[in-house]
Amino acid sequence: MSILKRKTGNEPETISLKAKSSSGDKIYSVTFIFDGNKMIVKCNCPAGRYGNFCKHKWAFIKGQDFMLYDEDDDDQHDQLQYVAERAQKSDYLDSIINLSKIQKIIDDAELEAKQLRKKVAIDMKKGVNYW
Ligand SMILES: [Zn+2]
Image 1 (tube, rainbow, N blue to C red):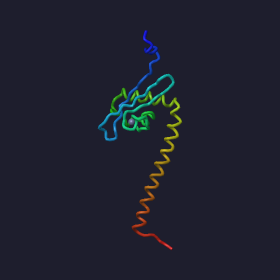
Image 2: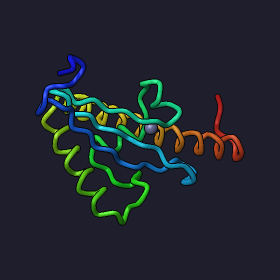
Image 3: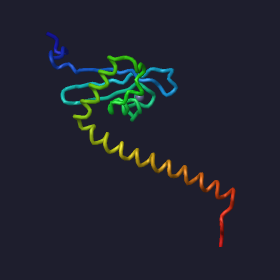
Image 4: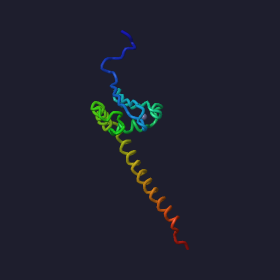
């Protein structure tokens, strides 16, 4: 018996989801590895392949299907739901909640800034009172 052989029943469970690139012309592979009590997430896109945060890993861990390469693939949907449910019962949950909250604040602030810039542009065209 080889000492390199893994113990049976101890193999990590791996689930791969296909994600589309922003331009839609490339397919990236997002892999979820359940090893013991660890949930590891990898993506082979330019950002994700170096272990950095990427939108594919982020979307899928939250269960969002808009980045699935084939949105009509029922099997991919089932697997996405499965990994998202497991993420909800993991230490990723706090990050999902907190980062989503912060993103909402950023989005609201960006919208407010955009409206304010528009107002300033109109004010500058029409002129404003000065004293
Ligand atoms: Zn990615």
